[in-house]
Image (cartoon, rainbow, N blue to C red; front, side):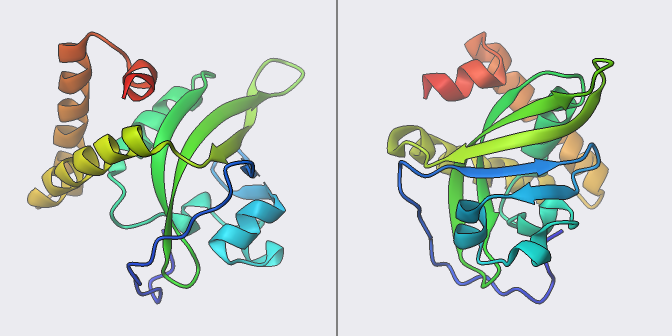
Length: 174
């Protein structure tokens, strides 16, 4: 999880539309590579990120159900797209449009993950900024974190079912 001493500033960071934040992790989410854009936007030195869990940049306002969906998808060898709010070392936040893909070994087994994050488009991000607080509130409404995660995931799946799309199609249609 994000460092407990980090206080949220409420300041939103951005990066240039021609920049791409790139990281690689092992199958447990431990960072094995972070590019310069990632280091700059997140305000970490390379030695502070490499070897750490990727959730070091997890923002507390990010619904857990979206990460569950992401991990469920990539762990079976599929790629996923997602909007994510991340936390910089100083407490600022930044939104990304993430494309996460599994990396495969010679035997075809997943050996890690590669994430490329771009600046999100304003229109879809505005819709995500409406949805995520609803999901987060549902998660926090329950005394049991598991129950909160389960019910928020059901909300996401119900939304997708009503629209007749999967998550990737949903976020591309926003």
